[in-house]
Every structure is written in structure tokens, then in C-alpha cells.
Length: 339
Image (tube, rainbow, N blue to C red; front, side, top):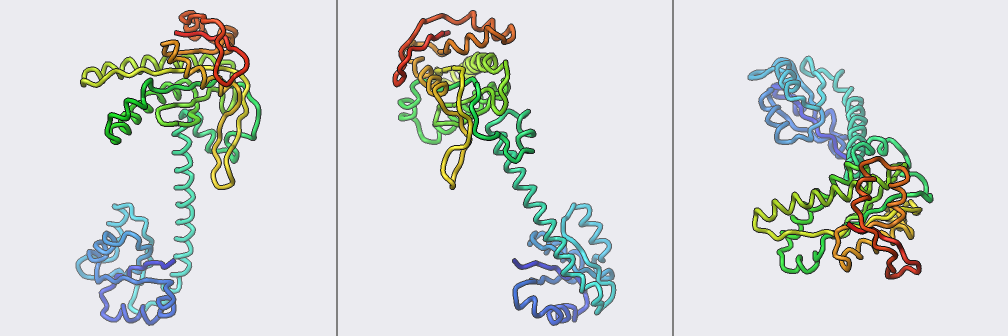
């Protein structure tokens, strides 16, 4: 990769001196030189080519001298490095070019690593609540090894989304999904949940990752309540704009699941799998036939009543016991509760 160097000097032979002195590096593509006769030309060159890494700078020049140029660069917080050529033909400082460029290379690598770490942190923030992101970013294996763990699982989607989307422009569908995801994700993060994945309008969230707690079931139930409240507020805004109201279906379940990376060597993703997850998905689909926005598995209700705070326990008293229900694809029946 070539290093771009800006030489700033008003001496007429300075360009010839440099091109002769570094002819081998220029020929091999190691150095690319740009030239300016004074400070103002140098500022213009830096603005036009922000990838210039190094200045070779004389002090005494017309229009704008070297010291004034350095002061302007400090004001602009410029990252460009400078070597002072204090006298015409001074080759001593020119010999430090390689050392300075090596230092720049090290700084560039540090910046690349910092940017990569920032991208990783931003990716984490898409799926985890903010209080977990810092902790996860510091770990080599942030979500731990493959393991069996008790978690609360939430599935939610928009009722009638497929038929609704057929009559909408693609851009309008995307806008609506972004608005929906933003409004539904906020309660999930507020309750300490993790987004496992978005599948179109469906949201798959887990409570108890990376570490399980006694509050996971209660947090999931509180989250569902907050999501339904957020939907009510959104529907008021939609109605004021003349847009149709939306309905959602939410399924909740609690129990053991397997946590770990799945995929091929080319693409891994962390996910939660098992009967608890499959059952939660089936409960979410059951909201359609039961005409209710929320279906909760009995295991989660038991967990909430056994140890959660008063807020979540109060929510269980708003639920209606619907007895055992047979779920498609599952041998045993599941006792459910609805809102």
C-alpha cells in the first residue's frame, strides 16, 4: 500500500530533490508525493486528498509559513503527521520518513482494530439490552459454550401481516416493519431481554441470556404487557393518520432450552432451541384461533407466581385459565392462559 506524502516548501528545486532522493520508493509505489509551495496550498491539498499521511514541511515560506500551518492543523484536529525540514537540502530529517511512516502504520492498525471493536459493539446493541453490551463486548466467548439453561421465550408477530403487505408498496412495508420493530424492541430491552432474531414481522426474544435469573419469567410477562401498551399508543397515532389499527399475537413459555452457536463454518449465529422454544412459537400461533393478543404457557405462570415481584404476579391475575390445549406438532397437551 502506497504512503501519500505532501511536501511543502517554496524552494524551486525541492520537488526535484525529493523525487531524486526517493526515486526507488516512488518507482516501487511505496511513496506517492504531492507538492505545495506554502501553507495555504498545503491546506487545500489536504482537503482535496484527506488520505495524505505525512507532511514534509519547511518553516519559512510566503503566504503562510510552516508554524502557522501547524497551528491551523491543530485547530482542525488533523491526524496528519509532520517532519520539519529546517533548511534547504536538509536530509537528516528526511531519513526519519520510514520511521514516521511505520508509526503511522501502527496507529492505522490501532484505529482499524478500534473500528472493528466498535462495529462489534454496535452489532451487539441490535440484539441485547444496553446494560449487557459492555459486558459481552469484553468477553472472548461472550455468550458462553453450548449449554442447557432455563429461559423464558417470547414470540410476537402482526396479525394478518402477509395479506396486509400484499396491498402495500414495498417501501411502505419496510417503513412499517421498522416502526413496529423499534416500538416492540424497546420493551424487550427494558425488561432485560435479548433479540434472538427478526423473521419478517415476527420477533423471537429470550429472557435469561447470557445468565438465567429468578426474574426471567416475570420479565417476559412484564415485557408482553408493555408491548401491548406500546401497540395501543401506536394504534392511536395510526388512527390519527387515517391508517388501520394493527393487532399482534404474543406467545410466552418458560423452561429448559439449549443455547449455542449453530450454522456452518462460513456463518454462525447464536440461538436458543428446544421444546420450550417450539412450544412458545405454537402458543403465539394459537392467538389467532383463540382471538386473544396473548397466550402464556402454564410453566411461565407457575414460575411467576413462585418467585417474581408483585408487579408480574398482578399480571397473572389478569390472565384466564383456558385449560389444556393440543398444539400442532407436539404430542402432549399444554395448559395455557390467555389475556
